[in-house]
Every structure is written in C-alpha cells, then in structure tokens.
Amino acid sequence: MSEEGAPSLLPSEVTDLSEEVAMDQTGDVSYCVANSKTESATDFAFGLATPPGTPKAVTIKPDWFGSYFRPLRVLRPALPTLVEIINNRQTILTFRPGENITTLIPKVENYNMLVQTKNSIALPGEIVLRIIEEAINLEPTAVRTLSLVSKGFYTLVNTFEKSIVGSLILSDNGALTYTNSTTSPIIGTATISAYSVLEDKLTYKWYSEMRARAIIVETLSHHDIMFMDPGGNWPTLEIEKSELYQREVLMKKAGLLLLFKLADCIVGLESTSDIRGEQSRFLERLGETDLAILIACVELLGGNFKAREQVVCAERGEQLDNHDLTERMCVFEDKVQRFGPYFACAYLNGHLNSARRPDIWVMEELQQGLEDLNAFELGYTMAFASLQSVGWRIFMHKMGTTQSNSWNEAKKLVEVEMAGYKL
Image: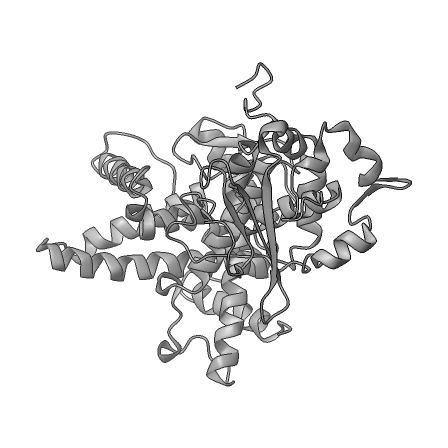
C-alpha cells in the first residue's frame, strides 16, 4: 500500500485487461473485467449473464447481511452496448451545470487504461464509472474489492464517491423508501454491538447501510415474525387475499420505517434516561395513525416472538410457563424499539453469520433485560417503564380511549390506513 492508502498495483501493470459484453434476454448488459496476468485475483463479474469464452470470474463477496438475507438488487438502466460506447463516446454522467465527467476524468492518471475491450480499445472514463456504479449497485461492499484492482481504480472510486452514491440514489426505484435515508446522522447496523454512528450522507458506508436496511425491511415484512392472522378477526378488510397481503406488507414497512426513526433519534445519547426521554418525545410527536402503526408492528413482532420461543423451548425440553414467555416478549419488544428492526433480524438469522454471530449479542441483550426486570420486581433496583407501555399511554391520551379498548381503536386506525394505500 502507498502512503495515501492506495494499492501498490499500478495502472501500467493492469493494462492487459480483457472485457466482454453480452446481452441477456431482458436486454441487460453484462461486463466481465479480468486481469489476464493474475487470472482470478482481480476478476470481477458484473451483471447477470456471462458470454462464452470470458475469463473466469470471481463474484464480489457480499457483506454479512447478504450472506443470509434475501438478495436485493436495485433495477438500474442497462449500460450502453459496446458499439454505442465506441461509436458515440457520449457523456453518461453530469455532475454540475456546465461540468461533466469528461472534463473531470483527466485528473485521474491513466484513466483510459482501466478497462479495455479485447481489441485493446480503451473505454472512456464515464463508462468505467458506470461499470463501477453497476458493481456497487449489485453489491455495495464491492467498493473494497474495486479499490484493490489498481491505483487508478482506487483513485477513481474515491474521487467520485459522492457523485457515484448520488447517482445510485437517484435511480434506486424506491428501494430506500423505508430506510430513513433522509435523516442524518444515523446509527449504523453493520457493527451494532459496538454501535457506530454514520455522520455523512452520500458516502459508500452510508449507502451500504441504507441497502442493508432495505434488505432488513424486505426480510421482516415477508417473514412470519410479523404475521397477521386474518382468522383472528384482524385485519377485517373484505378483499382478495393477494391484495390483502400487499396492503399488509406496506403497513409493516411503514412500521419498520418508524422503528428505524425511533432508533436513529437517539444518536449521540449514552445514558438510559436521556435515551428513554428522547424516544418518549419522538412518540409524542407522532400522529395517531403513525403511532398506531408503530405500536401494532411492535405487538406483531412481540406476539410472534413469543409463539416462536414457545416452540423452540419445547424442542429443547425447557419448561417455561406463560409468565416467563411474556417476560421474554416484553424484553424483546423493548429491545426492538431501542435498537430498531435490526434486532429482530439478528434474532432470526444472526446464527448464519459465523464470523460475527449477532444472535449471541441478541441473547445477551435479552438475558440482561430479563435480569434487570427480575431485579426490579424484587425491589432491588429502579427501572423505566417499557417503551411499548409508554407508547400505549401516549396513544390512549391522544385518542381519549381506555386501556380496555385501546387495541381495538389502534387496529381500526391501521385498517383505515391500509385501505387507503395505492397499489
């Protein structure tokens, strides 16, 4: 590595690059860039299809989210064909009025040698950037791999970081709608147990966090841990099952967005009293419908967690009565509101990440919560009321309702909101 942190592999060492372009049946363009000298050390696969005769491709390794969550790929405009690139050499990206990528690229030494065709025709810098964009779109953590291709790639990736991320956001097709992407700073979930804070938007780390959150939202909104039972008389909308499911998913995503906001509002706070106070004020600022959706989603997560734990404990031969299971559920609900939707995902799938094992962190948090609850019940310590109970009190005050019918009132508001969604 150089003093600036760039790889020692210089552009002159990677001029022998080969590139193939193929069109699949949907019209997507696939790029495969490989260093023939190293065969596979710096090989990459972009897109969906690979034409015959291309160099062996090594898929860019996903981060640990991608290893066990449903893959998410933002649909982006197809890259130009090779003929269009060579004949037109048109400017693809524009950054500021009067200044385009063609005027900025020469600042990167030997940029035109980063990618070549098999006939040694250098691709223009703007196309190289589009390839970089597509790689990051397919897998946000590809930034690390791309930076190691050559010093030229390292410089290009870092010089145009904000522009690349901005372009990805503009063409995300709504994939980041439920990730709280408009707020800054936010709490990063990639190192949740250490609790990192992301200050700046339009950075690769921030974009990777948004994509990870989008995967979390997709995972939870379709998982049985947020299952709504129509047989239990809720929801009561008399529509086709397929349409009802779509409306349920939209409601769940709206609730998960509110949970992200609830977790992000405590950035910079450390003491429990400060955190609980800020989250309580956040709940106070919500309207009746949003508060009902948030409360309902937490109830869904908690109720399905309890049912899941009952089955798991029975399989392990553990004897837990309803009181013990209810205590676990209350602690789980409180942690989900404290750490956001990530906590629920880590509970479900954390064991699949053998390197970090976030499920162990989840179990430690749940155990600590149970110990704190027991200490409070025995009169050893003081404790805050659960955030879910705080939310219910705020809801009852806003609606002027009582505890006995507050759940029915919340469900009515949620159903009205679900019925109004545009599919």
